[in-house]
Image 1 (tube, one colour):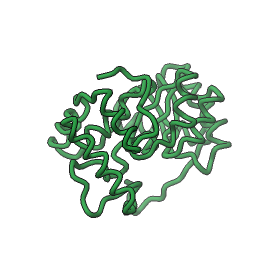
Image 2 (image 1 turned 120 degrees about the horizontal axis):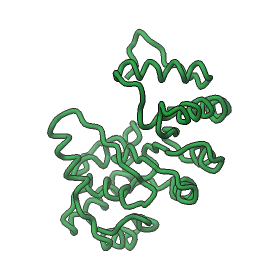
Image 3 (image 1 turned 90 degrees about the vertical axis):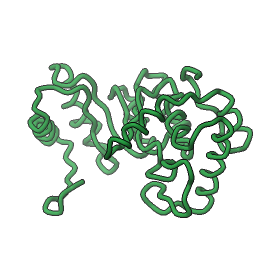
Image 4 (image 1 turned 180 degrees about the vertical axis):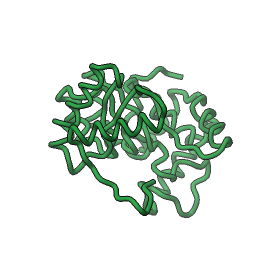
Length: 229
């Protein structure tokens, strides 16, 4: 969240990247971090793919960061970064979910070929997949979900129930089933949220679940490359 007294500014220059990371290290009270992402460079691909990545690569070589990547809610630009050999990881929000399979056509095969890790965020698509029972109104990509998506989510929940799974569990397990997915990011605010996140992570999704979703026309293909439950 950006305070009302400040303005969000994208700056992928060398000075901008160094300043941003230094401020983060100060806030964290450390001198190094595991991974740094260039956040949402949608309108700044030229600078992000040159000075932005080059600066992070220097920091990686110096041991200040262990891995570098981009964090976005689209798959096309991260795919180009991967294919150019620029990054180690992609944090992808909302495009590798049981409702939105957009990354299957570009980022997933590119990441697999390059050995780049995907960190799956937004697997609940901002709310529509976050509850066992889909409400009358739910959020998809931070907007009201259209009726057809609400019905599709309910249909997925019905198939999940036949396997003694909830919709949020299926949402998490879908992302985890891909071999290129290193981890799933789940937002939490309470101890109950944390417990639910752990339960969703630990749920066992059988291969037949994905086969049933494909047969029902709710998935184009089962998630691939992961370790079957």
